[in-house]
Image (cartoon, rainbow, N blue to C red; front, side, top):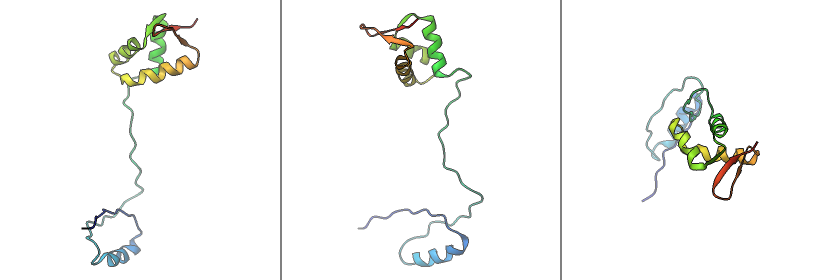
Length: 112
């Protein structure tokens, strides 16, 4: 038994009859639809969390806490109804930029 595939193509009107003729006896024509205008690829849209970005939320949290754990920052993100996984990349960026430094006991400290 051979595998079958669904093929979607976009062609000019004058080529439709030619394609249908080629398919005779080789496959099943499922549908032919006219397309109006250009179709754009779907894009994921971010949920709007208000005027404060995740970085701003983290920065404000750090201003209020001289030392903190990563889990405390994650809890602040969750409390603000944000994705908890977005806290770690922001913390890593802030560490790389020298805004915070990591202490030996798994805590972070605000610089300055």
